[in-house]
Amino acid sequence: MFDEIAQEAPPTPIVPNRGSVLASRTPPPQPEPVVKTIEGMGALSLHDFISRQFSMPEGMFGRLTGALMGLINHLPNKRAIKLLDIAEQDDVLEIGFGPGLALRKMSQLVRGGRITGVDRSPTMFRQAQARNRAAIQHGKLELIHGTFECLSLASASVDKVLAVNVIYFCSPDGTALAEARRVLRPGGTMSIYATDCSSMKWLQFIGPETQQIFDRKGLEGFLQRSAFASDQIDIQTVWLPFGFRGLLARLRKR
Image (tube, rainbow, N blue to C red):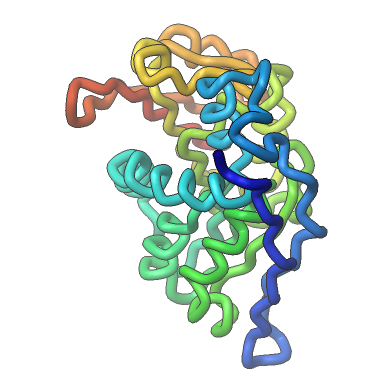
């Protein structure tokens, strides 16, 4: 069996080469792993352990989860980013950036604006930081270690918000959506991708950290009860390889 998973050293922040540009905010020291050994999974079970890693990747298994997330989210990221219709001057926020692949794509689209990413996993922070080092150094990108329910951004400070495969882990009371709407400028757009619950159950990604799952009707109801209730809400079903079904929502703040 595997020995205890060693904790990673604290990340070294990337310092931009201009005094006025943004730097990566270093996350606090990484907490003790939830599962220390394979034997230590105990009551969690392998299924619960995997689902927890997708919610909060950490340690050695978190790094592997980040690589898998990159594969799973490739097409959803592409669809969700296209739906945002990002302009060169847009300020963009990604909630739950994972390994940072969508951040890298959006940094190629934004010229005069800035990109901010928020994620609660120190392991994903490190992966995204390494993958987007140049954008950070040039002041185009800022990474923040934090929660979706309390964004450290000013109100009406971004034009677009991206959230791919993270809504399951947000509080059912809609706090994260209220925060996303708060930071959006009038006329701004949020793009949300969620795997349909039928595919979620088949993939067995549902676990202790999953606060809610959605079919199309459920997602529509959740959004209509959220802070975006008075805004324009459009939802479409998207089909992915191997018959997987996803839900793509566009929220436009009035």
